[in-house]
Length: 190
Image (tube, rainbow, N blue to C red; front, side, top):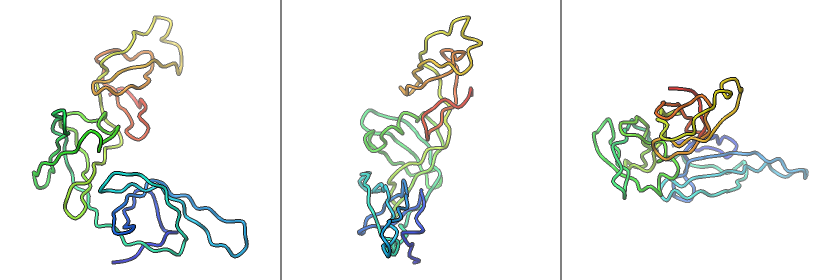
């Protein structure tokens, strides 16, 4: 297995640190001002087993084994209050995560949503949402007549999953909108 140097780390890579698999969330290269000192690599890592996020600094010469993480297509089935249930679309195997494990990602889930499941040593450890999801607006204040020409003005809206976002004034209750899962912002009408 090839080793990855700290200076080769990129976002969304999977590495082993102390016999635990981690997803690289952020990478920042810090060059010291002292002569002869080596560049440091500051990272933000998420443990795939415990879901804990930590910040860690490495020297550029440090090496890491690549974590045996695979992605497989999956779909969201339902939530029963204690767990959110998913199905691997290749093996038809079902698995579940608690709302705490999913964090804010659960606010983007609707029945039948296609996504990716991350597996470490064959066991489901996390889900990866698509870049955009379509959700219905459950509640928003009506926009006034004079609001139609107001460019860039927004109002709060609550979507079907409980997610709160800001939408343009012309969006009404019941309409479907596209939301970015990366930023949590309105992208367009669906």
